[in-house]
Image 1 (cartoon, rainbow, N blue to C red):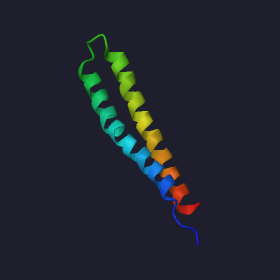
Image 2 (cartoon, rainbow, N blue to C red):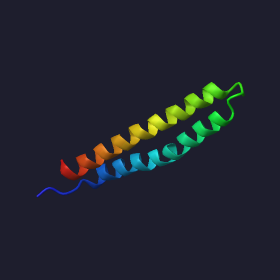
Image 3 (cartoon, one colour):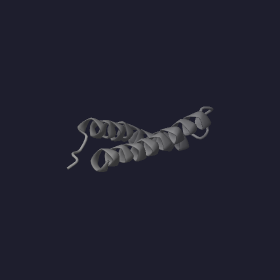
Length: 73
């Protein structure tokens, strides 16, 4: 009978924990950017927020895949 690989499971949980700040910071940065549309740094801050959101999405999917690998592989 196979058991859960705790080392790989911990790696997946670290990915999910790393995505949490990005998942919160991305929308906050984007909303801050839209409130300051007349400022010259509007576009770079908007791009930074979009990158943070996509990074959070990537880390969430990567973490879930690693956890599934630890449990079922």
